[in-house]
Image (cartoon, rainbow, N blue to C red; front, side):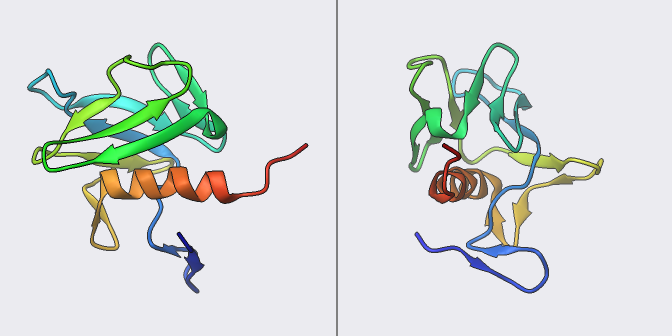
Length: 121
């Protein structure tokens, strides 16, 4: 996937910025804070994953999922068709899309974007 930098500090396709992600886990009914996006990776209540530790992601009609190398089967699957949002660092406004794209798509774009960056050696 190619990412183009737009003149206003955004990219296309859009990537989720650093912030708190809210979604509904597959086996739950209520939206909760599920993890934070940081410059180093994803941080949750009981896990931390650097961008390079994310082995993939999946998006279908019922759910979206982030697959972590060290946390296989740890419940990183979330329901689609229910509210999902982000509160960007430095803001208190819950956004449900970025440039018209749903937050789960933007999170997956962020993973792809970060993994395309040259890694320090």
